[in-house]
Image 1 (cartoon, helix red, strand yellow):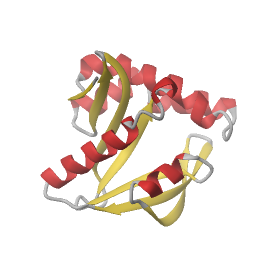
Image 2 (tube, one colour; image 1 turned 120 degrees about the horizontal axis):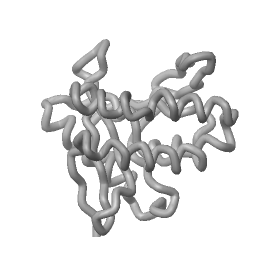
Image 3 (cartoon, helix red, strand yellow; image 1 turned 60 degrees about the vertical axis):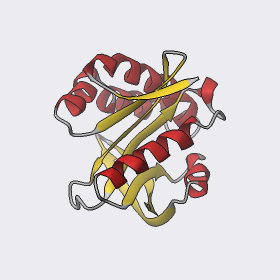
Image 4 (cartoon, one colour; image 1 turned 180 degrees about the vertical axis):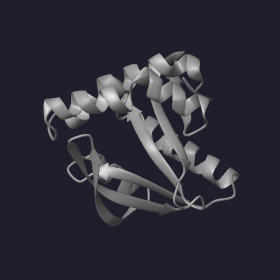
Length: 164
């Protein structure tokens, strides 16, 4: 049995824990260890996540299975175009993959975007990440490629879009 809730600052540690465990399985085969460590320390620090929640910079949905946090998604309007929303983060613990939680969270975010009166959802996915296939099955299409600097590293991404 699962439930989805809006994450609060009290959920920061759970979000970081899910990201930390998931990052290694997802990015270990495609990024250098140093880049993964840097990204986790930058994107998933207590200060960053709690600040995003506290300042409403990103909204987080936390999926719990039998009261255990096992997956999350984060989204917001795009800064440069608030008519378009962006799915910033989507991670499910490896032990839960295949249960449909990613699909459930994408659909929950799509519902939130529709509730906000918008109908376009974007995301970035690493060009070598197998999740691209999942997103295509969810109705996303590649609209362009971009290389995003993060510290001394680069994220080589596809930008994908789904009209809701």
